[in-house]
Length: 210
Image 1 (cartoon, rainbow, N blue to C red):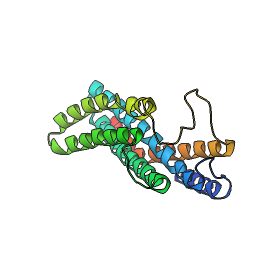
Image 2: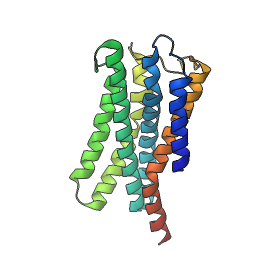
Image 3: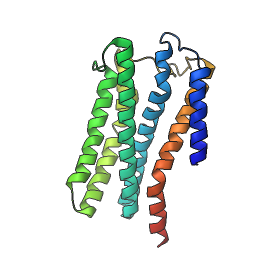
Image 4: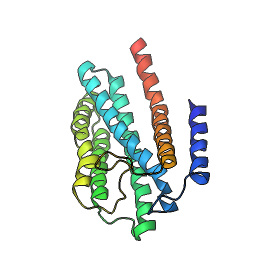
C-alpha cells in the first residue's frame, strides 16, 4: 500500500507540474486545489467514518470501535485544518487576505469548532466507559452538521470561493486533464487516510480475535 501511495503521489505531482494547464480564470495559483479539494474530501469521509464506528460502539460496546471512531475524528480534524490552511493561502494569493469570513470559510470554521470540541471532550473525561459513550453520541450528532456546513449552506449565499468542479446543474466545468488529475489526487488522499487508519484497524482485529 505504501509503495502504491508513493508512486501515485509522485505521478500526481509530475502531472500538476508538467501537464495541467493554468486553470481558466484563476491561473497557476489555482493548482492548490489538487491539495485543497482532496483534504476537504478526506475530512468529510473521516467524520462519517467516525460516526459509523461510534454507532458500532453503541451497538456492541466494543472499545476497539471507540478507538477507531476517535482516530477517524482526529484524522478528520487534521485534514480539515489542512484544507482550511490551503484555502487561506489561496485566498491570500488571490484576494490579498487570508481570511474574509466568506460563507465557506465561516462554515468550515464552525466545523473545526465542532470537532475541536469533540477532541476536548475526550481529553476532559477520564473514565473510559463514560468517555466512549459520550463521545459516540457526540460524534453521531456532529456528523449531522457536516452535509449542511460543507455542501448546503455555502451554496445558499454569494461566495468568493471558486465554483466547484460540479456546478449546481451537476455538470463538470473544467478541462478533462484537470478533472483526471483531481480525481487521482482524491483517490490518493483517500488511500492515505485508509493507511493512517490501519493501526487502529489492526488493533480492532486483534481484539476481535482474542
